[in-house]
Length: 154
Image 1 (cartoon, rainbow, N blue to C red):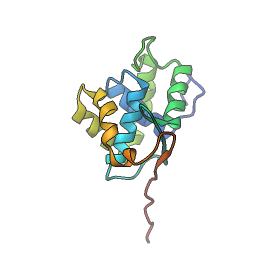
Image 2: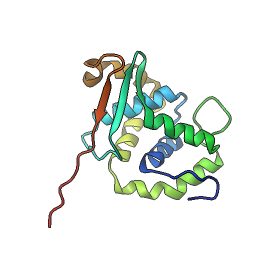
Image 3: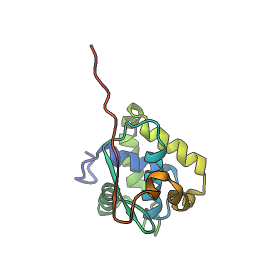
Image 4: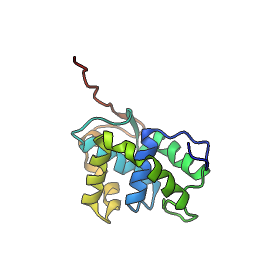
């Protein structure tokens, strides 16, 4: 743990730090919808944990991502603006933990997908409505993406 905060960092914390470091997410809603699209489109199912989303009228909501963003706000890792821009302290924490992500494929899937959107990340807020797994659920229902476990062999 770094001296700045007593926050314990999970792989999901580090993944969100990487996304916030690399891409201009202006709204939390866009981040939730992006995580949903990334999990739904990913052929690599090595998520850090099961992703549980709740379908809302205007997109998807992930409590775990919400909680992590609130942790970051309490630890003062954002600039005092409306968007989700990491300040110097947030970037330092990211640089301290970023090497952990190289052992997992899902973070790279997220980065590749975000690169495909470029500066148009807001498009995920529209695209989510056309995703088959999202369309088949009713508002308030859960959509769960479970990580695949690999069998260990000798």
